[in-house]
Length: 202
Image 1 (cartoon, helix red, strand yellow):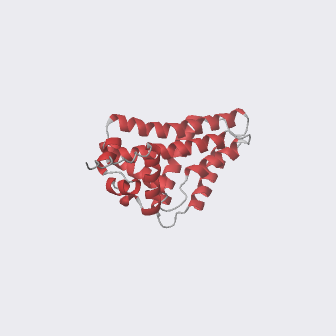
Image 2 (cartoon, rainbow, N blue to C red):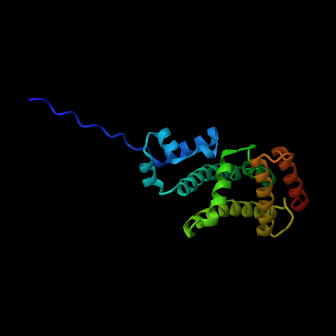
Image 3 (tube, one colour):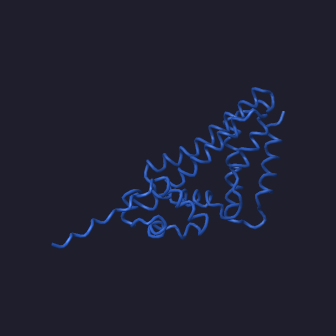
């Protein structure tokens, strides 16, 4: 009597965080245009159909990858802002973390793509994107308010100044991320330092 073949073992699916880390790694190494469901599936040894079970669409994959990346940045931001240092130094650290490292910075490349797709996004996706922006804004408002209370900053409207600062940061950061000629990271940091000095320093 012949023996029946041993059952094939199914390879367990990697945890969701591993999938998101792999997606971010692909963006960093190969560019966003190379991040496809099929390409990610080959990277993590999963079928495109299995990935669609996790993410439903490429838009959802991109948004979850952005949320994962933002979670890591948020933890780093919390660490920097919790330091026992003057508010001005912590504000400089916040700006340094915000501005892209350079042309094709993977986080900013992903951020730009998600926001570009948000024109047709549903309410849930738009709320999740707003939550990302809200976290950056709240931290900046709190830092400015703390600096005012300690006498390091002039008594300005912290929420209004944070809104203007982030608009400045976003505009310059897009220039850096897309590699606009004549705009580099060091120039942006200098512009922001000047803006902060003019508007905040007592």
